[in-house]
Image 1: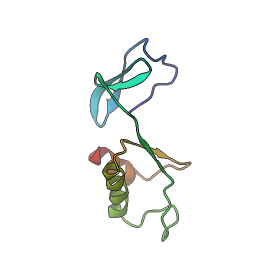
Image 2: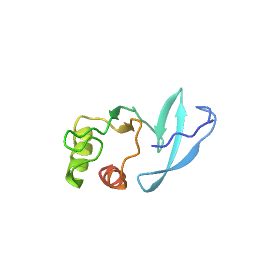
Image 3: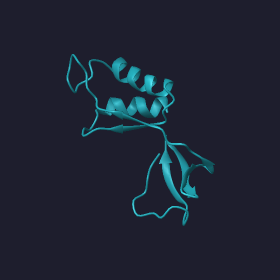
Image 4: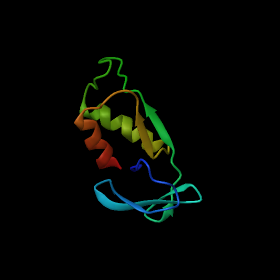
Length: 97
């Protein structure tokens, strides 16, 4: 999901790329909409800590398993804490949805 800075909720509809497809983002009564349907945003704070590599994931499978677990817990968003993840992380995030 993308948030557009400076937009006022409920006053306009904005377009953004969502998981590789064109989507529309808007709001009604200060609730976010994704493709016209209300979206409850439940996010996970990812601090990207790995015991055996500190801030570097040991393998691609490790990155994928973190994102799979986030989805299994029912979250639909991730906030990355003070770090830019490697491109592999964004690949898996986009691939898994």
